[in-house]
Image (cartoon, rainbow, N blue to C red; front, side, top):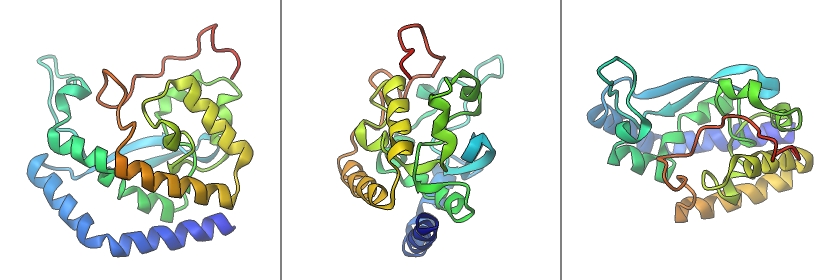
Amino acid sequence: MVKRIFDIIVSSAVLVLAFPVIVLVALSVRIFLGSPVLFRQQRPGLQGKPFELLKFRSMRDAMAPDGSPLPDSKRLTDFGKFLRKSSLDELPSLLNILKGEMSLVGPRPLLMQYMELYSPEQNRRHDVRPGLTGWAQVNGRNDIDWQEKFRLDVEYVNKKSFWFDCKILLLTVKKMLTAEGVSKAGHCTTDVFTGNDSKNTNI
């Protein structure tokens, strides 16, 4: 209950205080990337229940001759890179927090198709609401491998507390100022999770 009240108070305050920034970013996305301004995608929430994640668009709509989207690296513009590096693209997700679909702190909501690839232990990351930031984000963000990311997510589930959340939020501010781990080497964000191999049976 304390966590939920804290989520509502902080997300509401940030939405009000950052409203001019939100409007400016929305207008900029419309000018540089066109419409729609918001990126909407189904992601797994608490207990794996799907919800619609909201973010500002950071990629342009660019298609290959066969009609399929070009790779992310071809669609991510310098403006989009700035949005991701500054985390401004995440501002609409505060609405997901107000609706109770997300929390300020928790494992990041990943793609729906990853659900069937998790081990039972990895799937425990869905025992809590997904977060805007999390223990994995302040310990490497996208610049760590999937096994370490999932290990940190489960560690958060095991250790979760209000004070642990406060620690993660403070570390998040530091990470945002330094823009560490925004992308993995050789990728515009991170690589695709394709499942667990025999070498990764410990999680």
